[in-house]
Length: 275
Length: 69
Image (cartoon, rainbow over all chains, first blue to last red; front, side):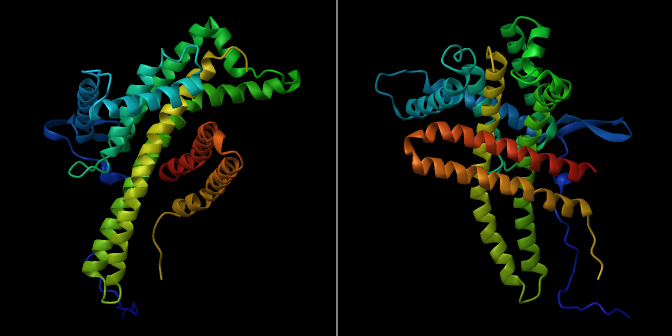
C-alpha cells in the first residue's frame, strides 16, 4: 500500500528541459556515421541555416544602408550609420586606441552584428533558436579571434618569442615571483582565453533558452496536469516567461557586445608596446 | 520522500553565489561612480562591463563543470 499523497494527480511525468533539447536532427536528407562510439549526423541543421541567413541579412541590410550615402541620411542609412558608429567608436577607437583601430573595425563590426543577429534569432518568432546555443558554432568564432589576436601580436612585437615575453612576463615584478607568474600568465593569456570567450557566449545562450523552455513547459504542465489550486501558478509562470523574454533580449545584446569588447581588448593587449 | 536529480546542480547553485555577489559589487561601484561624476559614464561603462564579463566567467566555468562532471 502506498502512502504517497494524491494531491497532485500526475497523469504523466514532467520532463525538465536539458541540453539534449538543443540537439536538433538535420533538415532534409542526411547520413549517420559512428564516431567515438556515438551516432553522428552528417547533414545540414537549423543553426547552420541560421548562420547563413544571418550573414545574408546583415549583408543585404548594410548594403542597402550604404548604397545611397546621401548627405541627409534616410531612415535605413541612419540606422546603419548608428550601428557602424557604435562599433567603431565605443568598441574600436576607445579600446584599441586612435592610432591603428581602423584596421580592425571591419572585423569587429562584422563580428558584432553577426553575433547580435544570431542571438536575436533566439527571440524572433518562428525561428526561436539561438544559433550559438550549439557549442561548435561558438568554438569556431573563438578560434578565429584567437588566431587573429595572436597573429597581430606576433607581427606587432616582432617575433614569436618577443610576443610570448610580452604576454607572459609582467613588468615590474620581483624576479623571485616570476617562475610562479609566467605559467599563470601563459595559461590565462594564451590557453584559457579562447575557452572562456567561447563558453561565455555558448553558456549564456544555452542557459537563457533552457530557462525560457522551463517556464513555458512548466506553466503548461501545471495548467494541464496540476490540481485546481496549482493551476494559477501555471499562469504566473507564463507571465514570468514574458518578463524573462525581455531579460533575454538584454542578455543577447550584452553578450554580443561583451564578445566583441573582449576581442578588441585582446587585440589591444597584443598590440600595446609596454604594460 | 525521495528526491532525484543531480547534486551537481546544488553545487552549481552554491558556486554561483560568488560571481553573483561579485557582479553586484561591480555594478554598485559603477553606479556610484556615475552618480559622483556623470560625465565619466562612457569610460566607466566599458570598465564595468569588462569586470562583469570577467566575474561572469567564473559562473560560466561553474555551469560547464556542472554539466561535465
